[in-house]
Image (cartoon, rainbow, N blue to C red; front, side, top):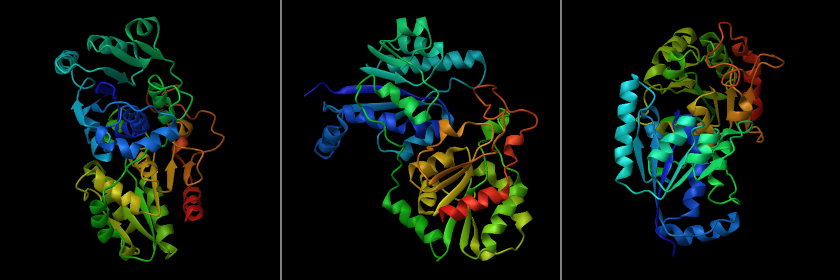
Length: 371
C-alpha cells in the first residue's frame, strides 16, 4: 500500500467555479482513494484507468463567498477559508501569512492550484510542499512548480481545471460536475413543491451581489422574467417556483408586484426560504427544468442533471456550459459580433449590453421543447 497522501487543493472564485472544479477533485480522490471506500471504487478505478493507492486526506482552500461548496460534495475532508481578494493590501498580505502558517504545520504531500497568475506559483512555492502543480504562467512558474500545466482556456472550464489532475495521472478521464443530494433533504423539499401534476419550472432570476458590485452585468430585465412567467402559467401546464437567496428578495418582490394575482396557485416563491445551498440543490433536482442566467444555480442544475435553460449575455457559453448535451440549452443573441466579451476582451460590462436583450419568446420556446 502506498503512503497515505495529504493533498491540498486551492481554487479561488465563486460557487460556480467550485462546482466546475468537482471533476478534478473526484479524479484526484480516485487516484488516492479512501481505504474505507476501496472495494467500492476498485471497479470504477479499473474502468477509468486510474491506479489504486493508499487513502488520502483532501483539504480544500477557497474564499469566503464559496465556503458552502463543501456541502455540495462528499469528496472534501475539510475546508480552509482564505480571503486574499478583499480589503486593503495590508489585509491581503496578513491573510496570506495566516494561510501559510496553517499550511506549514500540516506537512502536505501535494498541492494543486487552479489560479493562472504568476502570484499563484509564488504562493505554492512558499507553502514548502514538495509536489506543486499549477498552470504554466511563464518562466517563473516553470521554475517554482514541480509541474506547470499548459493553460487551455478555449474549452469547457471543467475540462480546463481537469487538465491539472492529468499531472497526477495522464490517463484520467474527465467527467461532468456531480452533486449528490441526500435523500432526507430531497424528501423534505419534495413535500414542499411536488404536490402537483404540473411540470415544475424553477426560475432563478438573480445574480450574485459581487458581480453587480464589480459591474459584471448578466441580469435579464424584470419585465422579461415577468412576461416569461406569465406565459408559462397561462399554458396551465406548469408550476413556477421562484428561488433565490437574501440578495434576491428585491428582485422577487418586483416580480410578484408585476405578476399581481395571475395564477397565484401555481406560483410558489421560495426566495430566501432555503436553509442552505443543499436545499436549493434539492429543489433544482426535483424540477423538470430550471431557467436562469449564467450563475451558480446554472452550475447546480448541471451538477444535479436537471434540464437547464441558461441565458448568456457577455460571457462565453462554450466555456461555462456543457454544449454537447441537448438537455442543457444556452440562449444568446445570435450574430452579435461583440459577444462574448467578458474576460477575453474586457473585465467589466459595457454601458449598453445589447447581448442581454434576449427575446422572451426564445426562452419560452426552449422551455417548451425541453418539457
